[in-house]
Amino acid sequence: MAFLDNILLSLESLKANKLRAILTMLGIIIGIGSVITINTVGVSLSSTVSSSMQSLGATTITVQLTQKSEDDENTNQDVKIRKFADSTPGKNDLITDKMISDFKNDFKDKIQYIELSRSVGTGTVSNYDDSSSSTSVNVIGINDDYLKAEEVEIIYGRAIKNKKDGDKAICVVSDKFVEDALGLNPKDVVGETVTITVNNMPKTFFVAGVYEYEQETVSTALKQEVTTSFYIPIESARIINGDDEGYQSFKVVSTADTDTSAFLTTIGNYFENVYSRNDSWTASASSLESLISKFTEIMETISLAIAAIAAISLVVGGIGVMNIMLVSITERTKEIGTRKALGATNTSIRWQFITEAMVICLIGGIIGVVFGVSLGIVISKLIGFSASPSISSIVLALLFSLFIGVVFGYAPANKAAKLNPIDALRYE
Image (cartoon, rainbow, N blue to C red; front, side):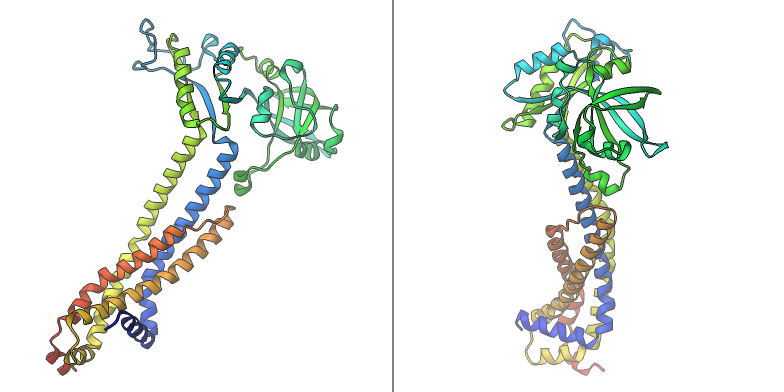
């Protein structure tokens, strides 16, 4: 019998026993639906967070001080690693302006920007319309390249120029901060003063420029409270903090034609050599690109593990299919005997019932995919992520449902194929 005829026979059989067919498919529907739902939500979360991290600068390389270990291979042979080093770098351990300048000169064809920053902490400003309430800002000291590297757009006034501004009490604020906290039009605030409380001390700054605030994707998705950045010259930040001159870390933005992965290794080796004579600290390089890759791998592993647990219900569904197929064969014993008497081979009988099991599982799989994708989209939207159903997982789920049909349909089909035609015809 042709494969198409087997399919038509299977559909006729399902049509004759609709309720039983639906109950049989239920395990497959739940199993496939669960797997697709988990996969859709996982892919949506991963792609949203990855795109957000990409916008933060996936190709940006961070150079940061780290403590040395005794097996550090880049330490000069005549330098002995201290076993009980300080947990924080001292003044002489910090990355100096000269180190950064030399580094920039050595790789000027590969470096687009070098970001320097100092976090001062959270500052608060009394709101213009209610002095009992306040708006919080992140006070950050920055160098000339910072705003360019972070693609912060100045819409009014100017950016901070450290050679010009030095330790002047100027700031660059967001248009959102100006509107929400000061109640002013952003274009009218340049040259005005703003007083913020930082480290329990009031500080007054002149507004040099206003930048356009852009809501971060993750903040939008998680509905986090917005706290904008309040930029001041990096030297002003150092004085406010009482910090030593030097940095524990800085960021490098490479040029567009530079291989970031290769340059990452080059930078790491360069600063390990710079710190080869330091007895407790070295500088290592890392990038968001590697973190994004690791995050994606972790999310895929978690989704796969949860999907594997959910797939257990597919086994239950497969057992249900096997059970119903055995019942169906018992009910259709005379039909099988008649077909054999008319010349049907064991192989054709076997394929008839395997095809029926496959059709049951495939229909259940299709319903499960529709259910899973729909539920995954709803959940993704509810938690604020853009839904991203995976086509490959959908195809794989449907193929797996067919596989379940073959595996759990074979034993009943084989039983039907081995029936003695005489006994089958006598069966009541």
